[in-house]
Length: 119
Image: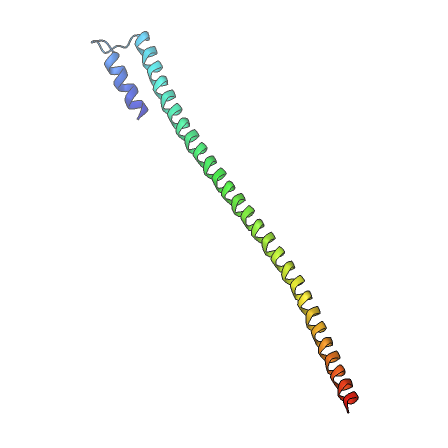
């Protein structure tokens, strides 16, 4: 395709005798070179844009992951605190049950003593 552009450019620049002057050849090469450089520049710009977009996407994913990680970490800490609170309540409940049983036993013993004394 580049050769086609070069040939068209060369034909259009050649004089009526079909002979090309050195300045026309130089001009054709320069314009071809300029067009090629422009195409390469636009391609690299497109690649840079896509690379920066990809970088932003990766950065967004990383920030999303860190946000999720932080929320999971806070949730885990809250659950661990809740478990430790429940363990403490369980210990207190166990102590209260044993105290209640001891008091029932003492009450039964006192009732027996009073019953024997009243006879």
